[in-house]
Image (cartoon, rainbow, N blue to C red):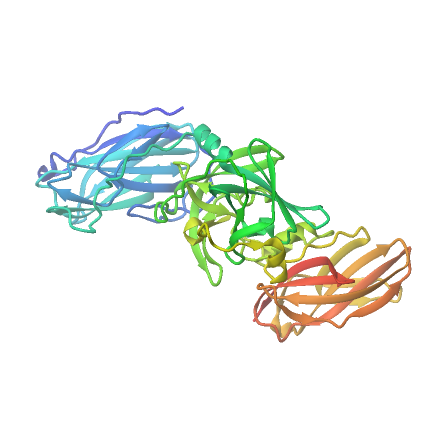
Length: 529
């Protein structure tokens, strides 16, 4: 439940020249899922030190209203003009502990003097709560940069700055927003809108085996956007709409392997298309939403926050999020409070890492995290995604495989027991192999690394084994000579090899063990200088 309080104001510190600039304060409660992130503020605010209170955002404007459980600044800006503007509203949102708190707002004029203070006591009943204060602007209001300091229980939780200037609004001088006013959607409305435009995508092998499952969403007639990792290695794709109707496709209209996005051509798709938000419409600290796949035909809406924006060499921009969807939810739309798309979830920096889902006895997730190979909670912003023209030439899944855009899927084999990389492997007199110091990060100065795979074959088999190392562009940089052997059945077999890594440049690499030409085990590892 949200409710508004009219609060007492301590304006005794305001000088006579500012007698008309009496601040007022109000507070509202928000029932939202908190994101575990570092303190930030926006719209003229600055970061604050570590605190149990996190500023989600601060924003200023000259008009605002309560809508759908939130207080909305109608014309977000940080420059206000005399005599056109008559009011400055500063709104803060926090995340913090429940219970009673003491709030203070300290207004400072451009000369650094405190002009007024308002304080109040309030009991927060939800982990996210917000409050706003307003100041009247008159002819005698001092011009320059003003500051509002927000304190909770005596701790400075954030500051917000804005500028008061005299004269008409100059071109490019932060004018008031003139676009039609929009109200944020309720979670229920967001869910209905998102669910109507979201599809499931099944990644299948040439034998029809399910390799991967992810999400996607409609962005135009016959066009479905998803993360590239959702379709990586596919021989065919099955797109399942909100009504359960399925459509098969093998055509990709556009893609970027490194930026982790792909646009599929899906003839006959009937779902409505999402509107795309403006590239500069979001900022760090904003609340956003996505649908996660909790199971077949079961989606849930998740509230999170934008906690960062980073640019990676060759991979482009990424939006960092407080939470990330499950593996089966990758490729879903990241939405703002109006239900417009700001990005596609996924944003993997290691192309092909999603294919580890098909690896029997796969790599422990904690080792990937320790090696910096798994970077969760990211999305690719829509500003990086190029929607092709209607007459642009498309590509088939087979062409993506032939040209090295895809990482070939791992062939599932029941006889594989365990695989790992290590500093070295040792074979004992009993024929057993021991991996010494298992790890997935090596230094070039190490000179070598080792890989081991254990199998237990039920019957006698012949096989040719090749171990290959690929860079992130899926180019082979190292390959062992083919090793042909005939293994007896009914006994434990170890495949092990020492690899020369001293000549590799620093970076992330993929290692495939192939038997008879098909990859049967895979991992990723990092080389450092």
